[in-house]
Image (cartoon, rainbow, N blue to C red; front, side, top):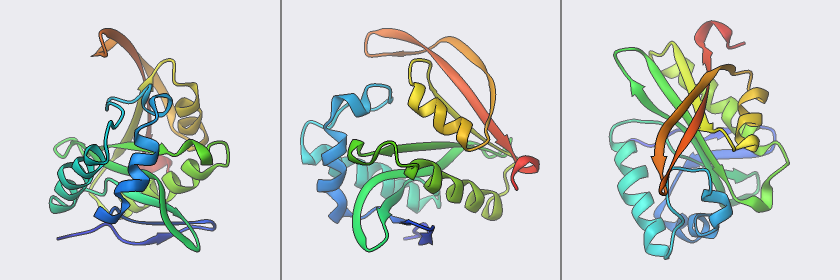
Length: 181
């Protein structure tokens, strides 16, 4: 099975997600304040994390989709979050960036550092013109990551998503191939 490559940054190693990461995924996946603005529900058991790995990660790898990469600190192979890009439209050459990080590591620039490398990797290795990123309008932290990555604000789609019993406005950002340095 295809796996995303190992990518090193100054502080991080990005690698494939493994079944042995199930406890680390569950550690952040179970926290409601982490999934508050995501489109996935908090993990209730380690089996939910196993399902994420087997049904989402491995399925994407079989289709050679670079989502998710495990985020680990150099010298410590323990997964602390995930980052990656999945297809929005192959015809339109557009992918979407997604990320999540255990809150023990928030505020250290880790997601920005990891996402910069994934964005570069995707532009270098896939026939894409655009990478978009979106968040629920209330998710100020995620929006700040997009801004730090140099993504440009495109707009707000009002009541775009119906989730958890209510409609959510979604903010969209993107970066084009010509804007990547």
